[in-house]
Image 1: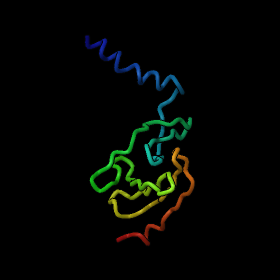
Image 2: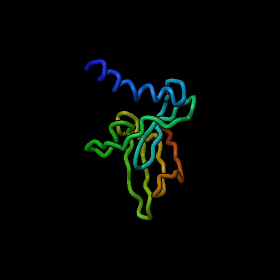
Image 3: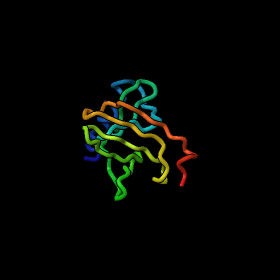
Length: 112
């Protein structure tokens, strides 16, 4: 029974390695108003995609982003550093999750 369970658990890993032949190397989170994910630096495959999970302060526990719906549709996504107080980037997305605009903040001006 243990061998069968181990085989069952190993199949997804083997399939992911077989699909592109290597272990994915990732760096920063990518995101839109719905989900966050990594992109492999070697093969550019999207991995680890999951919906945002928000803390009580409205900031995602995984990627440190908050989402505000825009009145004309789409959303503005603000990414904070780990303290949740310093804005790092802000993105504007359309309804389909396509990025329309990106703003990078000068971090020293935003420290409170």
